[in-house]
Length: 250
Length: 268
Image (tube, rainbow over all chains, first blue to last red):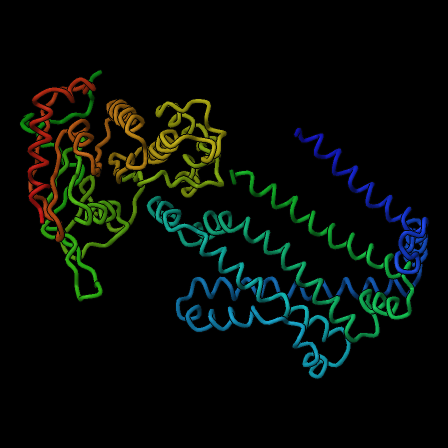
């Protein structure tokens, strides 16, 4: 199958799903109370995007996601690099990190509420906590992906430590690091949403949760579209960057 | 094809050896105490000579090469290159070509060749020009823009040789560079290496497992013993140059290979 044919089929599939979303509720095949037609959702989407409280909620959610991201990624990367590079640090902390990584982070949410109260700090702390382990694991995998012979070659040509870091570690870790950025954003976003839906006074997650409880399905779906578009946009941005940095990967 | 910098002993002048090793030993802490990897290595490689080192697996050939490259510190003895001791890697005196190609996969062929110059902060244009020149020398004119994964095994090793030569070091160390190649490519690469050697008049120290390759390439073959590695025999290869594939079928070639094989075979 040629590439253009694949793209055509993909578009057709997307249109079919969106078409079914419109037609099935209208035809009464599915309950329009549970799945409002697409056109109705889009009208509601237009309305809520203009609402001051929704814009405020988006700003709060975006701030929580970004702050947690800015804390979790560098801190996790630092700990990951340390645990891969420093023998003692790795030997002591790696098993612990590995086991904690396997625990569902959401079970700790009540503790975060007790410690931080309900608010910005609690959401950022919880999202950071739920993201940092994957960053640590990926960063240490990235360091371990740097082959010993790459370092040997550089040393044989008299590279300094700074040159080895910049010319060998950074480019050879880059593909895994970019993938880590992408995956940590997924974890991070999920963490903020769970925290907002569990107990919150603001944020998009909180609004969606309210709309669901009050059976306001058009609003709920409109909120879902906003979040889905935001998540996919970030994902695609990093993927584009990833592709540009990995042309050398065969 | 004539070879420029061949300096044979007895010219009336005493040429300074390109590589001079005296009483070299290497020991490391193993699981059962100190392990002697190399002992009493004396080695003189005249400028322009092609020296091949053979020996059983684990005899410390690679250790020896690492020390010649300044990448590992000897426990005892001295190493001099061009009359000065080698304490740390000095790519202007010694270039290294490693097992496998060990090219950087995120750099194109020409960028890989430029890499040693980049570390020395050579201006970009000069760097590129030197690298292109080296790619031409190794027969890869026009392949500079390719990434390693787009090159065959033999081509990767050519890039690796070009990288070893780009700073024009008088000495080139090669650690089983063709071991991962198929037999046919290996023969071609050996032949190519002799052509490059005769065009650049480098001093080459080459490690291999293949006795045929050793006799085909070398002016002198050094046979190393099992651990602790010592030099057991020095076999001058007085086959004429340029070498041809036909020489491999001659009695002379067979006798030389046999002499080396007898010593390796008798090792524990």
